[in-house]
Image (tube, rainbow, N blue to C red):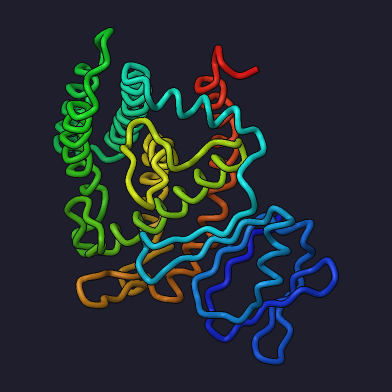
Length: 315
């Protein structure tokens, strides 16, 4: 299966029979059979018509449209999954406060455990960073201990536990990068350094993967259980992203450590730090290699999510 990344303003798309044709002016660049096209990612003003978008929706081929900032993303999809019973189960779970607290505590435990493992693994490789990484691990262990009781904490308390753990985690994680990148912790909207710019773009693409996975399983991505309802936010996808973030974090530090991405691949616009065109081409190439195993993990996880949400209710 093929994922088509389009990042040039002069491109145009058209359909020829059962294939999608990409042109640059009069030059024909590529032809991709629709049966082999898994999805399309657009980050440029290009030319296409509504009939093509309609055909992609009919074929079940999602279109991911990235804005100028890494957190700006839109999805064009076909219809929501046909089994409305799953969504009824999902809505009932949302009204069950105890169930929501159990779900949220489970997700955050998984996330903190993954963060802890990441830091411990790098502590073995980087003995010169033993102290800052150990301090961060200790804070994560303290947060995990707060989640070990039989009764899950209220959601607002859980948010506080997660927030404190995240600050400690990123203090340790930041030490994995050279000082020249100016990365001292997580910031966003806009990201102000190369590492945060890359994290934001990767998190956005990962979030899109989870939105698509929710639609494919017939779940409503806007009805989450840990993340509260918020206009325009796919809260269930936001829930499901949480335990996967450390996998992205580890991949991002690999990009910089191996110099796939370097400081000169970024530029600033106002307060925002952004990948340039060369940097984006490197990013998308390596992202596609990383996301393939992630998609397999997401499919397995979504099977479990559907089972948990519908347990005892779906017929």
